[in-house]
Length: 132
Image 1: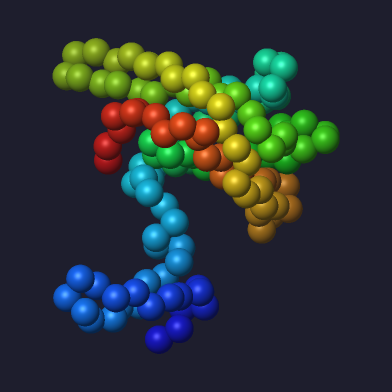
Image 2: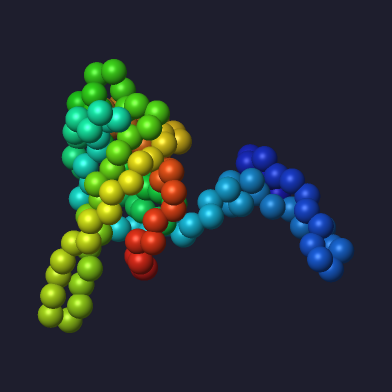
């Protein structure tokens, strides 16, 4: 069965060979479908836009945004992020703020041509403490 993704053979410690899909092994952190308020700034600290995350992990995040929200010159290769991660208990709600630098991994125009999908990888992994 060929999924269209590049694969490679690996040998396990027992000596058997297994096929792994490259895309499955690239992600080190589990993604969570959590909508977190996010501010994106350039290297000079100028805020480029605010949005909510589509998903997030300790290693990075993904957003979908109208193209009209993006800077005309595009998203820089490295940005600074302010992420507000929701925390809830039985009687409280608060947002924990994280600040970090991130690298642009991928940006794509989505099927509707009016939105973009943007993947950002944190320069250093964060301990966000998010779970599904």
